[in-house]
Length: 333
Ligand code: PEP
Ligand code: MN
Image (cartoon, rainbow, N blue to C red; front, side, top):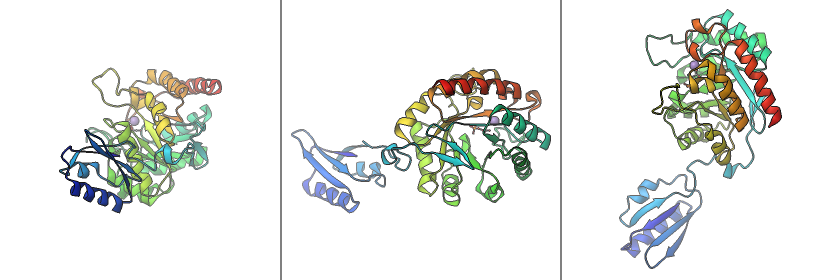
């Protein structure tokens, strides 16, 4: 962090600021120029609010030179993190494919889809039991019963299960869940992030909010990590833009960008990114080619009758074809 002082800064006030920084374990390096005086702050500035410093009379402006996230930063953790999802590893070259229906609808449906995606090579099963729906009149998910059916599908296939937690009051029901998803709509539900961060070390699949910047996504990961859970997998699933042809606008550059600044794995969700089942295959291939650490793909055995997100759900046959291509791309890269 660099503090740029006003020209007329009073000396005793500058001394006060320097002392204040020292009490916060920051080493202030003052450079006095003929036009401007700046203070370079060396040390951990994550706990310092630049806004408070900027509010001081003598300060012209404050510039951050370091990212505000620390636990999520590659600077403090140079090696890629490998997140262990009940035996399925994600990150540092370990590629995972999470597949399954948007929501759990019945035992027949979830078990059939689980078997089909496993046969095609998926490494984890997804399925929503608690669904964040835009309309209160839409299917809200099966709740606890949905979790029970997911457990059955896990027993049948051995696939670890991934499902969304919307409200911490339901956490006690998530004992058999292997990866807890925090969805786009809750990415900045800071209380929920702190709660899952302190309550569990289970992997958290954190999806990018619909209008969240990359930095905001990483700060949300930071919330979970700073609360005690280092096992975070990020997920790019597209953001809201002026474009309406697709459900969201996918930014694959996020994968490359985050890999530079963070050690956390980044998965891509081509289903919610596009909203069209016919687009999922090519976007999944592109995400794989760009170096994503995995994919999360919606698959339904009867998409036209799906209770949620049928239009973007691949059939098991489509999914199997995508998996074949992904495997070839993985071998090539
Ligand atoms: C989902 O994965 O079913 C979901 C609701 O995703 P998102 O939070 O990315 O919209
Ligand atoms: Mn969905």
